[in-house]
Amino acid sequence: IERCAYLGGMDGVSCVAGADRIGIEATGTMPHSLIICFGNQQAAWKAFDDVIAKKVPRICLCDTYYDEKTESILAAEALGESLHAVRLDTPTSRKGDFRRIIEEVRWELDVRGYRDVGIFVSGGMDEEAVVELRDLVAGFGVGTSVSNAKSIDLALDIIEREGEPCAKRGKRGGKKQVYRGTSMIGEGHDETRLAKETPPKDKVPLLKPMILNGKIVDEFSFSLEEARKRVQEQLEVLESSSLSR
Image (tube, rainbow, N blue to C red; front, side):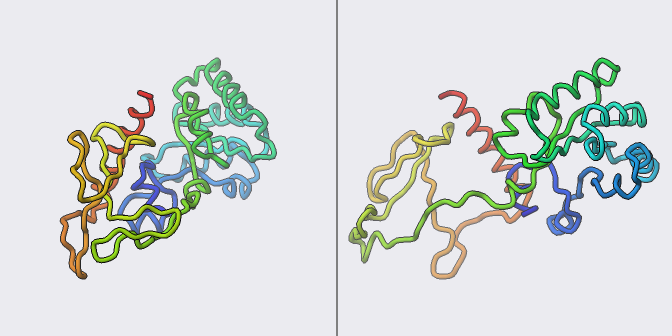
């Protein structure tokens, strides 16, 4: 999961073992268990600040016992200029209008002079929440929504036999190639043709052999960073393509 999340564009992962496995440094914030063990939010925040390496951003978890606004103010007063951000991990049962809660926290921090203190949010975050809240927050903690994607209904079917098209009901016979314009990614932009047909001039083929007769016949990198870079480049094209529609 950590490898796929990082490859897909996440800035980091919090699982130490997972981060070690893929060769990056784990990142994350303090857990509720720290505050609960101390029994006092301010004592826990100050202990974290005293013990944890200075290179680690001070992001205080602010929803354990009091409401988010109150705890955010307390965190700012406790750590002062050392505070990098507050994290709101509000459970679904108490979320209500989460955007309004974040706006209130932002307002109360700003009026007290803590305009540089960011707001991180977590707890039930998905792609829709990211779009809705990204103008208000500095970062998202996402777990469940990236741990398992929604399934795609697919099947592998025989569509050609000894060079002749053949297919079951509901399938299209014949070996095919998929073409895509280099500047457009998204629904409706890809074009599928029979492999033996003349390819379109303005698009590139996506399907190419990687292994033939048990041997690797194409050059590709197993580097995580290179794969991550390719994904990010494609996401940028996808976003610009979506905005142009």
